[in-house]
Length: 296
Length: 189
Image (tube, rainbow over all chains, first blue to last red; front, side, top):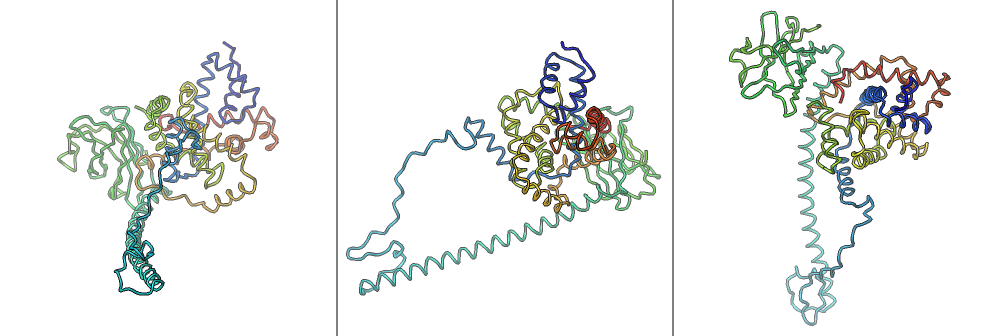
């Protein structure tokens, strides 16, 4: 194993930020390949720093349509084709479908669309043609125009409804976003009590002005027939804020419209209850597994 | 299972050509990687292309991922950063200027999708990471930003900041370790 030197740690840092030149890269790679545990641990720690840096950048969600494009590109790649369709085969040639022409009547050269026109009494041939074509055109275009107008007004209606729904959602979201960004918002960290699983993690973001709060919980797996229940701890005792039901990964985000009077609120707690929660909304019936004081 | 264990098992499946696992990783990290690409390239088609390049490379390189060197999130971020810088180097200075202007103009963050539970958790995490970056001494912050986001080499940074090369090297390491220390390990993906 190549002997570890402190300069290797600087090489690790330069490598993690992508600022290592070729010579440095070769040296570090040889050293890492020899299995230096100090440098491997250093790389893990430093790459965490890069993750923090990336997470600190302004949030720019990927456009929703990018997802399908990326996954399609990967599908193509997985199928052994390149992005430009290099191995695509040309579809077998098929004869073009014959236009649907009406059986032409002997002696009359009618355009295909003339089938919508009822047979007229015999007229001079040129006149019949012109009249039929104009009538056909009118009929077809009016049908199209009528259909199109219908479709457009349906689309407009849908767009309006969607717009209203979005505006409503946006208004609601703005309210919650304001909570996250307000300088007055307090972050209350809940810690597991001796009766709680030490893996439990939860925070409450609480805005005293609006009395709104958001609970973010992780590793919330209550077990069969049990539920976690969140409590506001006030000067007059606990008050239930409802059940916390996590997803399959144990994560939960609960929005609370009103957590009560901020002047009497001392903290938040979580209890482990029988399924459905404590029968008494003023008192936990099971063990209190987490607690976090406001300002603590 | 922790977030990083989950990521690792997803990436193992990706290495075994599981497209669903890739889609799941995409859902977990596309926004973060896109944010990084936008920071380097400005908003628009180039950033989206860089995002696609990133996932194609992740698909191809998954078998070579080495967990001993860092978490999956950091591995993906490194790929995204390289692909975005590749594109930035090939984009003309005019277009870069336009992108930068557009980025300035779009200072307001776009509204996030309604109620993504993970999204909220991530925004809370963002508060603590933003605080960690702000708390860095300005030269330390500059060295990692110039290297990581602008793609400068350490000697270029030394010239730019008029600092000795050795100092730039130690600032880089100190800055990364400080960032890492200020955000609790369990909160990082």
